[in-house]
Length: 544
Image 1 (tube, rainbow, N blue to C red):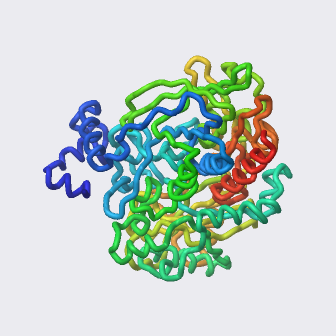
Image 2: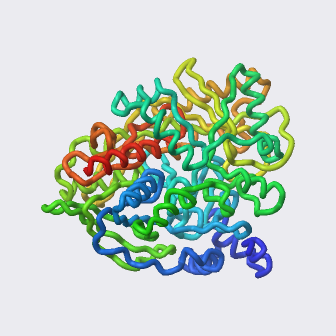
């Protein structure tokens, strides 16, 4: 059922103004406590699957994987294929797909399905949104100086990313990793393995020529006029589903500016459709959504102890459990994995963790930009990124053709996501009073990467005769956020070169926390997945 149609039929326009959209808090008619149960009931009607009871995980499993994003999903599948009984713990819900239902909300008028237990969000368009508290798919964690966007669902970041999966250049990879990982090995074996598993390929010509990708064609035209050669991006999207959107065979999603909060029709070939599905198909891996891991520890005999809170999608606590395993694989993302390790070292539950735990965190140099187009015809904001350019006339960086999150129609603005080779690194710290883990990101670093990216964008605009610094929407490249958090438990420092955590045999880091703050001016997802394939293969082969 379409939620807007439901509201109209029920005469619920007042409810939208009360608890839904971009309205000042002073205009909210119902108190939040009264509004949230109404929304929760609606969510239960729209997506009953996420409210279904989840069985309790076993008290002991040979292996536990924390998280279900790229690194975690690889670990779960390869462990299961090797005959290892594996429990996968994920704090978020397991969301279905449907060709016609609105499973996920859109970020043009979002509701609580979009965000993990927060009641407000201001994205790159700087339009404030307010909604009911719920266990939605995108966690916007606010640290001092930076907002971090990360997944909170079975499938992790694969549910909420824009689908571009690109390998860095060898020289930039080596610059970042310093010889800890052999790029040639990834290039020969593991990048191709992931590309095949996830069916990565560039945007087909018929999709590229369609109306929703008018902005992509205009973007490419401008960069060519500025002397750049746009390079096609490999993407995880299933192009036949987009063709279905264009023909009216399925509900529009990826062709109408929807991605950051999920694609209801399954257009994005996320991890639920491959690695995680295949892991469960072995019969030796089981995924438990709604299970938040709070602490990790290791007993004297080597067994790991994991404390877990089971949550309803509404945030209500259903149970608290203590689980054990022989081997523990951390795949909760850069922030989640780092939080668990930093807290464990500070509280003494993993006392032999070394001084590098919590260190080496970076933003991958993320910057959002937009410039004007002399003429943009058509309608829609197609999500998959068609192409990118690279510039190293100053600081090395790439610009990717992007869409404008939150605006499903053409605006005349051509958006880019820049990824700058930024050496800045931060360190997670522990607050003993609150028990919280946090970091501080220097404004200077964000100003510097923004200036570098903006200089290239201005150059393109000037040479292409476009409008630079497109600001009609306040979209002026100063959103202090990253969608690509990396580091906190870096390979070769906190771990060995295969993710084995120093001081605690049987403990492994398998996700973006292992990467030293940058993947060399490209999206991290392909490199995270390839490294996980490389590392889990060695761990299984060597039995440690």
